[in-house]
Length: 327
Image 1: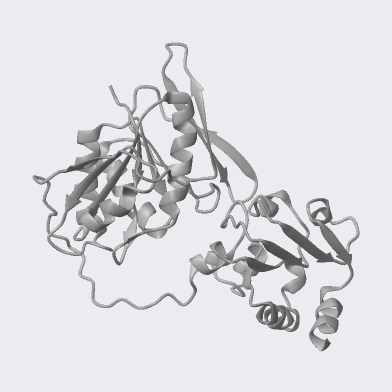
Image 2: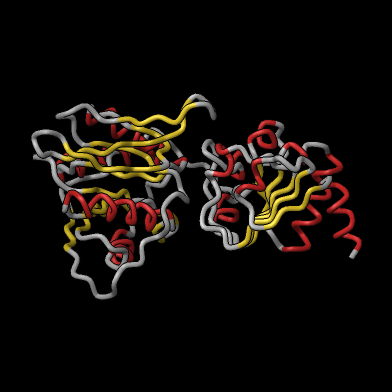
């Protein structure tokens, strides 16, 4: 019978991606109820180095395939390897980062395994059936920002597979010198890929810059004009802060989607968050967690953002920013 909580160890340039530690936290939350072992799967040319990193991550078991070449971005070939690994491990659930790689590779893995895939979960809860078996309630936003749904994999269908949005779980802090089982599947071979990597270029905007930033300045509808947004950028520059925004700013192209914050964007955990012209709808504020200092500026004294902020300034963000920038 399927058993285990399997985590996909996404990696790039010889390093396990930071989001994997968040998935390990989610896996430990599930383990508290189910008692299952936490497994990690990794397939890469430098998998020995990656496996060594995973030994310090808080997982119980590591399953690895050493490939004969770098298979980053060769999703067709990598998905075949991972699907075969998961078949052999037979976990009850598979947790995948809701990243570009995770979505692309595991949509193919799910198709090969004939199982479902819930995308972009923001919360995982464990429940029990009458027969004593456990299942995962996979919560996620849907239909834009209008509905929050709970999805359950059909009984008897394994693995329960889901992508988890970066930022919604805090990274797991593993105990040093933990005993971890490591197993290599030497007979699984990376097939030829129909994808050829011609060139790799750095991204124009780095999602990690906002996910890891200690100070984030967030713009809402009040920052939609070019003049106001320019003031916001200057303000953020003075604070050496990352810039995020609500969905309207992403829709207009003023910020990239990777900097949209909320249920349909990313979840951030900055030390300081300053919201400018943000109304404070729950679809947005759900994307801001564990902020030590939250300051909001809005000209509407009844704006919901003041219910979640530590300090509020009732006023026009343009005037507030102009005065600050004159200091």
